[in-house]
Length: 467
Image (cartoon, rainbow, N blue to C red; front, side):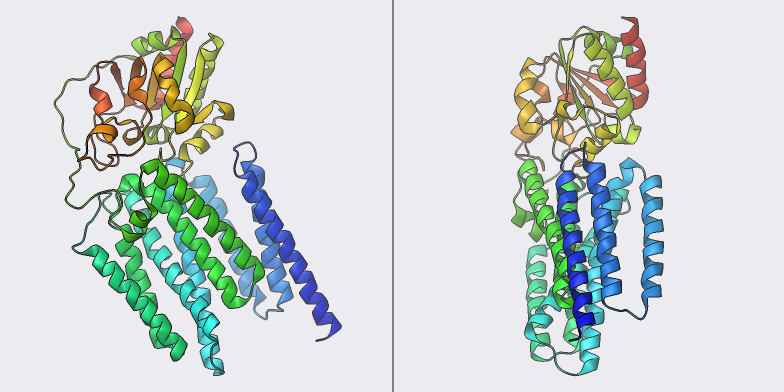
C-alpha cells in the first residue's frame, strides 16, 4: 500500500473518531432540555463529518449523486422541522424510523448484488450481517409505516388481532432463519428475496396488534431497530462510524423502550411478539357513559387556583393539540407570583411519543426543575390542593388500578385522584386513545372544564388577574 493511500486511510479514521465523539457528546446533551439543541447540532455536525470523510476517503466516482442526495435530504429535513406541528411529531419520528430501516436494507441489498456479480463467493459472516440488515430494516420499514398510520388515523388505533398471530409470527421467524442458512450455503438472490418479503410482512404483523395508546413504546422499539439495522450495514461495509452510530441508536432505543415498558407495566417480550396493549378477548371500556359529571366555568376554575397553596399541572395530548403550553406557563407564572407552589407531573407515556410533554413545555420555557416524573410526583398529590389535567386521559385513569378487564390494567398512573380537587380540561367526554372511559371524570372532587384548552386557560388567566 502506498504512503498516500495509507495517509488517506488514517485521515478517514481520524474523521470517523471525531464524528463518533460528536455523536456521543451530542447524545449525552440530549438528556436535558437545556442542552438538547446544542446536542442536536453536535450530532448533525458529526454526521456531516462522517459523510464527507466517507465520500473523500473512498474516492467515489459518483459523488455528484451523493451531493444531490445530501441537498435533497437536507431540504426535506429543514422543511419538515419547520412545518410539521408538534402534534404530528410522533408520526414524523415513525416515518424517520421507517426510512432509516429502509436505507440500511437498500445498502445491504446493493452490496449483496455486487458480491454475487463478482462471483468470488461470500464469506459466512458477511452473509449473516447482510441478512440481519435486510431483515431488521424490512421489519422497521413496514412496522414504522403501520405505526404512522395508526397515529395519523389512516389505520385503526384499536389492536387488530389476527387468529393465531403469534404462531404465524414464529413461523415467519423460522422462515427467515432458514433463508439465512440457505444464503450461507448457496449465495444467491432467491433466499435473500424470500427473507426480505418475510421481514416486510412481519413488520406489519408485529405492529398491527398494538393499540394506539401504546405507540410511545413501539416508536421507541422501532427507533432501536433502525439503529440495529444501521449497525449491521456498517459490518457489511466495514464502516466503523456506521457501526458506532447504529449501535448508539440501537442501545439508546432499547433503553428508552425499557423505560416505556416499565411505565406501561408491560414486558419487552409482549411488545416483540405482538398483541401488546390488549389481551385476547379483552374489550375496551370506551363508548357512551350517562353517569353525571360536575362542570364549571373558567371563573370558578380561576377562583380555585387563585386561592390554592399548591397546584400540579398534568399535561397530555390535548395540550399538544390545543398548543396551550405557552398559556399554561403564563398561568403558572401568575400563580407563582401569588406565592402558590406550581409543578408539572409528566407521565413517561403522556402524549404519543417518548418525551412529548417535556419537549412541548421546554418550548414554552417552563423551568426544567418544575417538571417531575411519575415517581417524583405521585407522593405529592395527596398534599396538593388542585390538580389541573389538560388533555391527559389514560395516564390519569384510576381504572388502571382496579379494573382487571381494562386494557390499561396494571399500568402505573399519575395519582391525580388523590389531590384535594381536580380540574379536568377536555373538549368532550370522549375516551382516551386506549378507548377506555376515564373514571376520574365521575369522582365528586373532579370539575370538568369543557372547551379548547388554549381558550380555557386564557380565560382563567384573565380571571386570575382580576382576583
